[in-house]
Length: 203
Image (cartoon, rainbow, N blue to C red; front, side, top):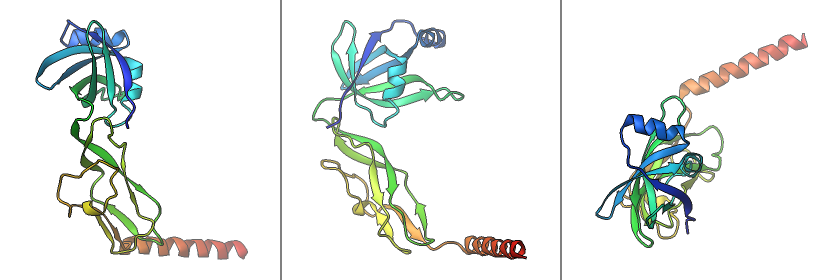
């Protein structure tokens, strides 16, 4: 089960770019919380803690709202500074324990293929349905037993318990290809150059 990350959230009553800049100068990040038919709630979150928490995809946040109730939430959208990549605004959606949500998780290739075969990746993320409190951080594809000509489809993925892929089971995730002729040529040229350099050194 995913551990909650508790953040102290403060209500905010000032809006607009100027107010957001002033808020960020105090070390906090503006945010909006919505979902489950509720009116949007404007909040501010602790800057450093939020930046660290949201380094993980689909981080489950427990918002301790001053003067209000505690709410579980998932990040829906992040706005980042184009220069520093720092988070400048967060859209959050309310979730409930036991509720199933649809999220995207990273697809991570593990293992090494044999020889000079190439991995051609068709998808870098995977849409899954899972309980809000049990979202896996990633889905792994082990390529160590694959050979040239092999492919991995959605139906071949090993998903964590409780997670479901809602799309087409024949969606291609990755495939293993022979190296291109150009790559082979470059390899041959490199080896030939190395042999020639070795011969000159021995002379």
